[in-house]
Image (tube, rainbow, N blue to C red):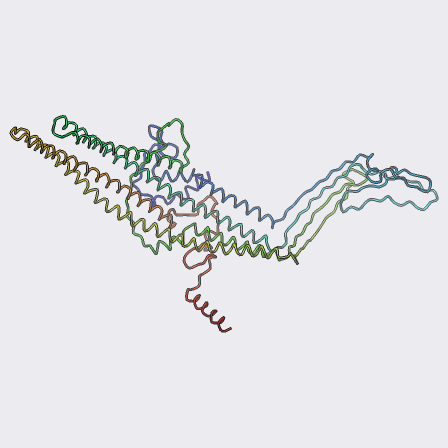
Length: 573
């Protein structure tokens, strides 16, 4: 249910991002639409929704957010009260009580000798507690006092309930703040995976469309070559063309068949690849049938783009940079936590304890009371252990800052590459559209010329006195016409294939450009409580005017003047 809500929160903007030419049937089957052969059919929107619900990479990223929430709870518990209850019950055989204390030694009293076991009966081993050992009352001075042995209980028990609370230290609170940044990092990683997934689904969907069209183009070419072969065979049987023309037509046909087979295999592989991205399982009943079908055509909607604005938008919106910012802020808290070990640590403990009587096991004859303890410690000399940790954490902080700066340059590079690829593919699409028209016209003229020559040769056959000359003319004309048709067909096939590849390149480059600029999807922070509140603030503004920690950058001239002033000061010294 949470994944479904998550998908709805993201897919609210797909109506603006996806072309309207992608439509499907009305019958639903699973996550796509069902056909008569029980093969799920997907439009582009349906494929994206299915991927958001079932793709394992995105699901793992969502679980990572939940894991970091557990880390927050675990670390935060160190600063919250903790209550523990302990209980102890002990039974000792009375025959072992004296042996456990004195063994068999004997003592001498005023009236005689008492064995060690009898004397030990009056001595009790009390359980550890705040209750002191019970001593028998001293008898009044008397010449012949009666001796009374106190028999201890063979059962002892104690119950304590103690609570502890951290008052102050220099590490826990910084570690808690660091866990919040870890959670933010996992959230932005989730958004980065989501954008990459949408771009991947679009690219794989368009790959199926272009492979499907390439199969149609190659099938048309094979059908034309088959008709050419049949025509040449008929002419050869009529004696108007030599055997060479038939062989040439057969070679052209068998050269085209591998291209058709390769196109069909590429179509099957592209469908299997998309099915894996969508998280679809193999269905044994479908056998060799494709796992899915797609509905749609290859769109071409040119977009006007300003490179400088696109780069700035990418810096501000890319989750990739915001994740790097969260890593920097987390590492900054780790530095503070390491340095906080030099500060004092103060804790308090308090509670109650109930202890059984050493001579009576009755619950009504117990000792009870309260405990209170305040502890404090401060490091005086640790031989540099804390200093070493601080140095390590500061070095890691510098590494994350350097990584952030490099990530900014990486975003700039990705946007410029996607922009350049868009320009290239847009120019290719325009050029190949004109080339397809010219190749189609050339093929039409070649066919028309072929028909005119055939008609003229049939008319010339009626002239018997010119049979020898006409036979040679038919031979030359037939070979020339076949070669023209074949060349025109090859050029048309090449132009159509190149145009389809250019369309695919443009749409895939457009999907990559949207991902690089952070415009692949629009977020409304409707992620079923997955979005942290900090992500809605200026903490994660990653525009050009801030550094790795989000602080305003110094102007370049100020930095230059500062460096010059320092160099002059050092020279004067």
